[in-house]
Length: 276
Image (tube, rainbow, N blue to C red; front, side, top):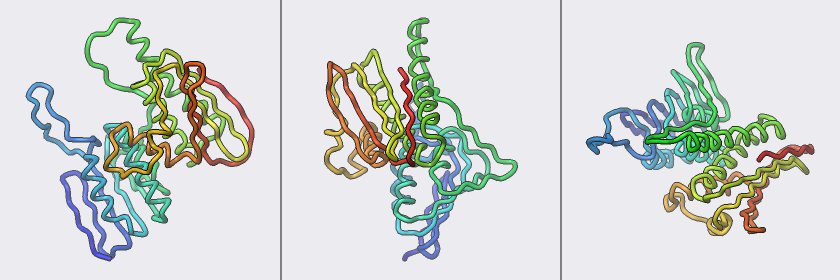
């Protein structure tokens, strides 16, 4: 295999023998380079940008092992999810993935770190994994702020429900990524006023169900045909990730509600919890 030597301002990707690759990943994570609100000019800084990063990652897809050297404060959660998912895709194809935290792995950086099969942390390094949070700009009254807080709280409730039912395992963390993406789609696009989430572990699988009273949307129809990654919009990237992680997904419109059911492979056991 050919040797690879890619150098960007915030990361370097190299493979001398075509079998092993090293990715030095230093910088903040964004879909595209951020711009100054006042001048509309690109902001100077060290940024890992989604499109060019994935193009470069594709260059080493046939390597047998990948070592990531991490120093990132995080950035765009959706972009970190996509990178996490692509790394897991490489791992499922047989590539061994290792992350070495040279400095910090915070927020979205920690999400990418968790995609690796093995993580090595230096004694002076720092890992930060936090609850759901976001930036809000503009003027809000108390009721609007409470609504925003409730949306963030929903992410944390679903996370705790799944962890209580299925435990903290690599399979559960992949299921949580899918649940986070589904909830983000409901919060951002459905205009729903109520959401019911149920989670059950049975017959070697984790079964989760989202029921919302929002506008009609069938994610299984959207992703019925296999699509090239580059052709997906940001919402499609999330739905594509769900389709890859779930062993099965079903949709029905029932009594004016969207009912989405997903199955994820787990070990046998039976527990049932509901969160609303």
